[in-house]
Image (cartoon, rainbow, N blue to C red; front, side, top):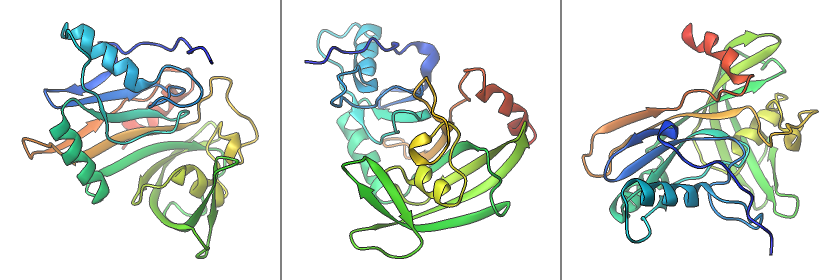
Length: 239
């Protein structure tokens, strides 16, 4: 049996928002959201330990995974602390009532300043990659996203990406198909991978309705402090 990798723990500084029903976390790139065959400690497990210790719970804490981020992706992820919140937020995601905003760094300049990408995606489960097509393909799923170039810095372009559908590896595949693979994402065409098992894709914010208060909410995740992402704050400050 594979040994679990000793990943970092969740601390208060990782928490973006918390109340009785919700917990929003600024996920580190490289952390897995749920247990997989790698045997590594998952974010779901880290959150369960964090809540149990924080509130001195005698039994296991309830942790509901509402949505997922790819392992190499950083940023805002929302988890439920009650079954009621889990059910209601699952429905919001299913009904596409949640607005997701990502930031991506690419090396190649996009063909236009802002635009919409519409593709058909086909998942190769053996290679664990998603291929994008500009036409309908058998067993494919339709994917759509909007993007905008925020600015250029040191030969890199910072993009704001707003997926309108939620497909596996959608942003990574569609940006690569456009000719703009994400920095570090050698799985989708960038020439070099990251030794940290991360790519320059960050879940910036989620806009949704609170599951019990029924109030609109926006939760935003600051950029990672990894020696590379920080420099792009200057572009965000100009917006």
